[in-house]
Length: 484
Image (cartoon, rainbow, N blue to C red; front, side, top):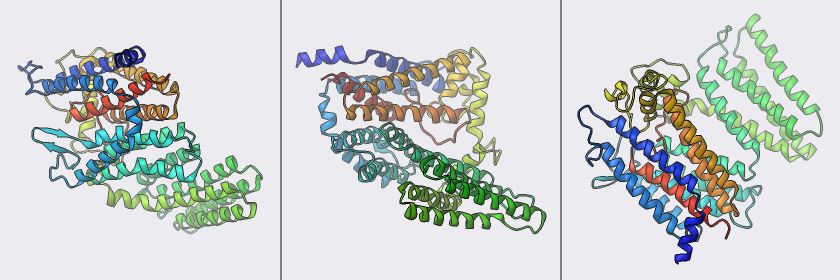
């Protein structure tokens, strides 16, 4: 047993642990600055936010030590069991009578509140790595790909049922793992197209062209569907150039002529013509798939029909599925509304706090915007604005650079794994961290929607800190045994 422990300490990646410790310490000082009240500098008092965070940091260090001491085979052997237990917790939490800030994602045990969604990320990463690590697994096989998606989507759906949309969206990061393991880029392309359709359709849906009938949003989305379908045919069906010519020339040509007719002859809604063209496009793709016996035509048909379905349902989802506050946040982000005292208040105050920090910042505990509590959730979701105000551009840039080095280190560790299990789990970890970083810092700067996810190692809270610690140290333990 002594030999095993010694070998772990010799092979564990100390550089990553050092980065973890630096980020955790910086995070604690940020919590101190964000939660500090004038005249109350006792940061070690367990009754304060800083004191509680310090206690959770101590527990996290012990947790990390225990995870490194466990045999690495345990994570592979019990991956499905851990995943099943967390799914049960997620399901049970849906019926939790305790509701915090409109969310039922918390389990309250006396003075302690835990959020199973934070630990479900680790469980999902393990289950996905276990399944994709099987010798017979092939991502090109439809059944295997479908089961991989089920592993990802089941906890995501359960978390949505808890009214915790932000945490659920984090599971989209796992698609980067699938892409690394060989998933065709066309699926990622379809995902990017969906985002474009949604943004363009919602942002310009109510703006009419000069004919008074045609919506700019609907016109643009339907035109993009035809154009993207033609580009996919050009990329994946190179046997003949005629289909590309027909799709682009007829589809876009008829659209352009219809628009001119509507603008200068008889005004009408050009979208009706575009819908007819999209239907004709789908029929033509099915004909090509059967006549040419080329499967890619059928896949492009699925893309086209899926795009049309997404276009028709996006408006309904936005108005009837999303909560009112989520709709307003998206509208503010897209510039459809200006609500500096309502939905845009958090972001507006966050920008003011970061901008007031200047180049070198106001100094530790000297931030006025954060001390006077102008920024809501300033020690949790918006804690990065505390860094910007107190440490300025230099401090905020340093934090971003530290996180960039941390992400680079995780990529390096994931690529050097000797098993697919280790590599998949490693990429799951770095994808989750990257998603949190990109979205959290983006929403503080007003670049992404405010969806309420923490900044790793910085945001106040035990569940998020423990969840990130488990994610990281399980990977470090797996990495330490890579040469076995």
